[in-house]
Image 1 (cartoon, one colour):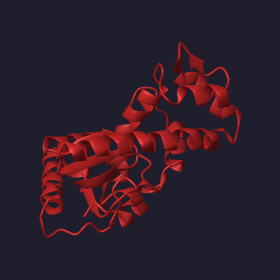
Image 2 (spheres, rainbow, N blue to C red):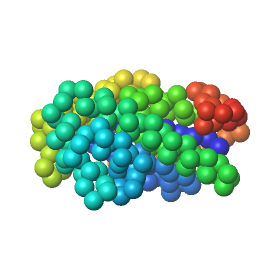
Image 3 (cartoon, helix red, strand yellow):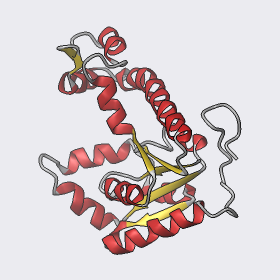
Image 4 (cartoon, rainbow, N blue to C red):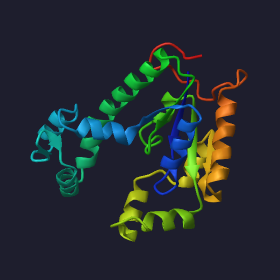
Length: 213
């Protein structure tokens, strides 16, 4: 099974691109959805976050508003949060990919906004970066309800710059040229990675065990 890592900065069209891969038959795993499960009632992150950040758990689930307030009060809080959540997310991903492999899937796509930032690019066969011109990105993001330029800039400051992402990518999908152009790029990528002659550039290990290829 080929595993592609999908990433891209805010407003680049990553979710739309992920759906295009799903339409081409890829099994999907979404890091944000995994976090929602972990934060939900009875989720694996609830107890450790309750201990690390007293008061952020309400009705057996992590209250994101309270968690954001806790993060804003302590400069080291974000690092402590990542130390708790990232391993749990990785375990969720490994479980999902193993299940897909057992079911005979040929292609899986892991949608991880902070793929490079968390070192997730070392655990996939190839990385797909979704991009668009800065003007297009800003227009998309600032049109979102409640979004301000200051908040947008703060989000960007925590993400690897788009130019660096593209430089480190194995494949790039430009969503600024329209949906059909993006869909054509996705189909070309799928065709390439499923070709018997394709060699994964990253040589990832399968869930920390035996080589996948």
